[in-house]
Length: 74
Image 1 (tube, rainbow, N blue to C red):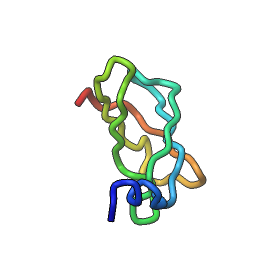
Image 2 (image 1 turned 90 degrees about the vertical axis):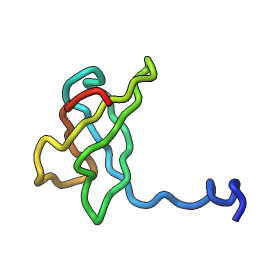
Image 3 (image 1 turned 45 degrees about the vertical axis):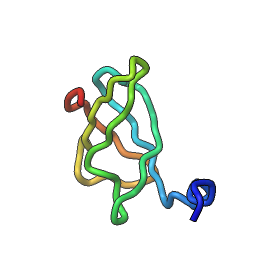
Image 4 (image 1 turned 90 degrees about the horizontal axis):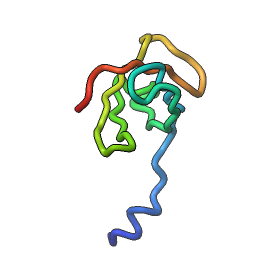
């Protein structure tokens, strides 16, 4: 399969990850669902090219979005 064909593939279901605190507070990103639930952590690139790791604020969340809290820079 060519590289262009791979880009045309569907990513799968996503949720909106709402970053509640830390350097990217207030940012909302799309995160791919893992085994039917939001991922436990997400790594997000900041404007300064650094990467920040966030984790779910609560294990039990429902709906199309989930809140994440800042852990540490990666």
